[in-house]
Length: 427
Ligand code: GLC
Image (cartoon, rainbow, N blue to C red; front, side, top):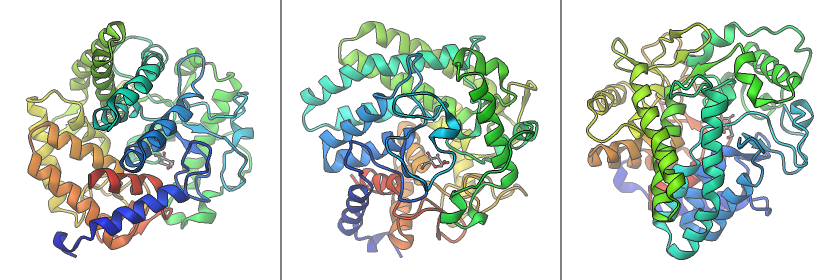
């Protein structure tokens, strides 16, 4: 279908219906029925961008519900298990975090402040939005501080993820080598639920799942003490994508705090953004012409040309020459795929067009790239990518992710963050 055939009002009505359907009536939206029956951290923040288009109050509530489950040390967990559901593994009994409302014990990409700034600046009722954002600022600042203390104890300016699930790009090729070193002894038998909902060829493998669970059990044995986990984890990777999100959120937290008269928070966040941006430069790889992860356990750069190394576009200071290099990489990837932006470079033999974060396209990361393009003065490219996203959903439906070579929808269906991105990208 050509971009001219897009029926935007119809697409938006369908997107809004999906968000209503996945709203469990208690202030949170599940990613999709069956496969993901709880509240996920970055899903909720991104879903709020879509909710803001239809109901501003509900958008803020989505975020407030998530933040209400922040831990005392400042961490905001990756899953909140508000209600029982048997369709997901590992559930609250496996995590064993001992919270009154159970949560997982790890975190997820901190898109929160980036989303909050967009909600605030787009609000019809600025005064009401300002009061709600102001109440959230100290909590966001505490989460960002937690990242510095618990995930960058040596003060390098960059944080490590301790579990692939923290990256939000669960089975990315980026983690293969580090994950290989994670043992599997004592994991025992378990029954995965994800492959009952989705074709196993589109999901992580059993070898990966064994290691995901080994790490979970190791952290649980340490009582989920975040002061101890960084030193104890055999998996410790510095992801340029994750760090770019934190840097951009720190910049947006500083801007919000400035606007809402919280100078101490603004100064702290600004310092974090600047340190992070300076340190990010160390992750550039000339041979790949993009950023790449750094394995903090081995002290080596990881040769993996993934989407994570393109996301810094959305955090680099305007005018940074690395931004033009990333735009060239994006053009090159677009030339080699029918639909942009693949989660891994198709020229890599490890690329897999169907398997989750090893090749498929995701609208949420595309949304960040659209933002990055606009930030660096690439308005035409930004609009073209946004239109491509809308066209893809119009053609294939509201899938969880999409095949970059033929555009077919993959994973779960009627997916909340895909619906939210449709609403947000067609604003
Ligand atoms: C998967 C994705 C992750 C997302 C979650 C819920 O685990 O990899 O990014 O948050 O599903 O949609």
